[in-house]
Structures are given as structure tokens and as C-alpha cells.
Image 1: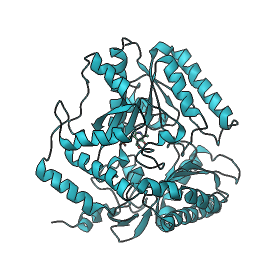
Image 2: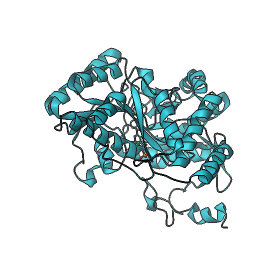
Image 3: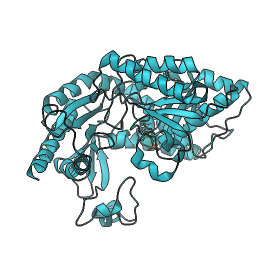
Image 4: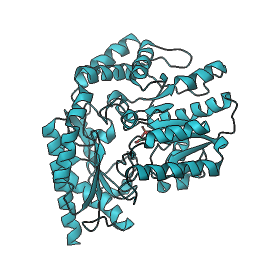
Amino acid sequence: MVSAVELAEPARQEPGSLLLHFAAAGAYGPDGKELLVLERGEGPYVFDVHGRRYVDGLSSLFCCQLGYGYGKEMAAVASAQLERLCFNTNWGTAHPPALELAERLTGLAPEGIAKAFFTNGGSESVEAAWKIVRQYHVANGEPGRTKAIARKIAYHGVTLGALSFTGIPRIKDQFGPPAVPTRHVANTNAYRSELQGEELTRSLLDELELAIQEEGPETVAMVIAEPIQNAGGCFVPPPGYWSGLREICDRHGILLVADEVISGCGRLGAWFGVERYGGRPDLITLAKGITSAYAPMGAVLVADRVAELLHRANAPLRHGITFGGHPVSASIALRNVEIFERDGVLENVRRLEPYLRRRLEEEVLPLPIVGDVRGDGFFYAAELVSDAGAGRFEPADAAHLVSSVLPPKLLEVGLIARADDRGDPVLQIAPPLIADEAVLDEIVVKMRDALLLASDEIAAR
Ligand SMILES: Cc1ncc(COP(=O)(O)O)c(C=O)c1O
């Protein structure tokens, strides 16, 4: 057998035959960036092929809620399932893990949510949600509801349907007109707004109402939003925003979708982040943390009133995905729920959330390069500014900062975090939900150190 080191060794400098996602392969190599090749995890830590240790302050792109220490337990679950039944679809048949998981998740979900449709990831969940929304309106005698409303800079996935809702021009423009006509309205960026609190809420909801009126209320099928918008840097909703979305959607017969691919599964200290903000969505999309990434999986949770109408109209769901609800993934997702309960994972987030916020305010917020620190739960962003105030970096400087300056500094201090410039530049963290005070401290201090190193480099240019 080829060892992990032998396999990874040629990729140490360059990706070789591997086409990296959202990366320019040519940027890596002897004269370019170092390619991080991770081979092992332990608790909240990961180790590269050279044995260097990093604290995973991002839960591997918001997925590894439990960190890396549950491999044996999850492997036993997977192995037992593989021996019992390696696979069966959810296409007009079922298997016990999918049935049981659907019960568990809908039992945990906000009131009114009664059904679960399984997928393999976030983009698939978002597209499945859209198709369920469309089928609902058709069954309801309103086939003219063909449009969606999403928010600017939001990321809802990359497959062509989901990409329609994504509000980041540079990752969609070259792929032609959107599959779903989508209008993008303002997100909940309070830092860059003159308005705050309820005034901000009013203005955002007024803008949404106007967009619906301009599109024609009878043509709008869905409003989709994340409880906290990730892209742009953890935009927390202002007070009353989610109940306002509900009221507007109800008034116009529009379905409300909470995209909880990141904010769900404990990231905000609850199974569903939207509950924290008083949201009552009709559909909820999940992925990433649903298995804590011990296997790939996603889900769409659907309100009873939506599923019931399809049932009454005798409208079979015209959507299916071969591997959606795979028994191994479903078994692991079930064990993930059990571990959350057994090991008090949500309680840990709720208990330590104030500590994380305080430490960020003490160590990161005072840095001249940081204008704002925002987030909730174990999900935070520091917005980076050019002038110790709220000054914006020029777009080219922001791109340089997040793609060339910060990544090597993060590796140098031994922290996995996300430098991102889909909106204004931010450095984001999303610690594993099992992190204790010491791990959170380590993440915050390393975040500070990386930002200090980056500031020095910028100042020296
Ligand atoms: C809010 C949200 N929706 C959808 C997606 C797409 O998920 P995936 O990458 O699993 O397709 C993502 C991915 O980061 C996301 O953050």
C-alpha cells in the first residue's frame, strides 16, 4: 500500500493532477504559494504531511463540528452499516437509517417542519429546496411563481440552479444567464450601513417589499437567506428581521427558505440558527455539519403545509438523487445527533460563546487593521480596514491581502482560518464545537498574531 506521505509528497509543492476547487492551480509551486496537504487530525488539530500542527479554527470549511477525535466511533457505525446493507436509494424505497434520521431531524426542527429530503451536500440541498418550492406553487395553482429573491454577496452554492441564488457576480457571470430568475436585495451588513437596529430592519424589509412589488408579487416563488450571512463576513440579522421576512412572505404567498448549510447543526448553539433570530421558515437547507463531515450528506427540511399540499394534489416529487440519504451517511448523521446530546455539544457552544466574543474583543478588535468583529455562536468574522478606522481597502489591495499576504501568515502561526474578499475583506473563524476555553484562546491569539504579521508586511510595502 502507498503511504499517505508518499501519496502527498509530490503534491507538497504543486497540486499535480489534482484540480483544486476555487483555486488557481498555477498559483502553487516552487515560486508560488505552499499547498497545504493535511494528513491527520486529532481533536481540534490537524497535521500536515511534514508533521506541522495547526489548530483548525474553521472546522474545515464549517463542517467538522466535532473536530477530528470521533473517527473510531464513526468508523464502527459505518462498518456496521456496510455489513448490514451497504446501499439502497430513497427513490420510492427506504432503509432504516434514512427513516430514523428523518424522524430525528424533523423532531429537532422548528415547529411546523415535518419532512426531510436527503442530498449529498449544500448545493444539492439548495436546488432541491427550489424544486420543492416550485412544485408547491404549481400544485397550488400558481405556476406563474417562477422567480426567487436572494441577497447580495450571499453564497448558496455553485451548481447552476443554486448559482442563480448566489449573489457574487465574479463566480457566476461567465456561466450565462441564471437558471432561475433571481433578484438580489441588500444583506444585513450593519457595519457598512448608516442605519442600525430596528431602523436597519425597516429599511431592509422595505427594500424587499419594493423588490417584490416591482417583480410582481404573483411571480415570486421563494425568498432564500442564511440566518447569518457567511459571505461578506458573518452578517448578523438586525432585530425583527426574520419575523419581518415571515410576514412579507405570508402576505404575498411566497415560501421562505433558511439556508442553514453553515449556521445549522450547532454552529450558533442550536440545531437551527434561524430559531435564535425568531425565524419560522418553510424550508431549511442543511449539509456540512449534519454528519460533522464524517461522511458527505445534506438535507432539505420541509414544512408540513408544503409537503401536505404536494401529497393532497397527488403531485409526486419530481426530484431524486441516487446517493441522497446514503445509509452510511445517514447512520453517521444519526450518531452525530446522539453525540451532540451525549457530549453536550450545543451546551458547550452556548456556554463559551460569551467567552469567545470577549476574547475577540480583547485581542483582535483593537488591532488597527480590524474595523469590526461580528458573529454569534462559534462563527465570527473580523473585517479588515486600511486606516485604523472604517476605511476600505482598494479592491486590488484587498485581493492581495486575502490571497497572498494572510494565507502564509496563518500557516506560519499554525491556524486554519478563512481570509475572504467576496465582500469587504474579512478573516473568519468557526471553531469546532467541542473547543474549550484553551482552544478558543489559542485560535484568537493566533488570529491576532497572523493579523499583526500581515499588517507589518503591508506597512513595509
Ligand atoms: C450557505 C451555503 N449554502 C450552500 C452551500 C453549498 O454547499 P456545498 O459546497 O456543500 O455544495 C454553501 C457552501 O459553503 C453555503 O455556505
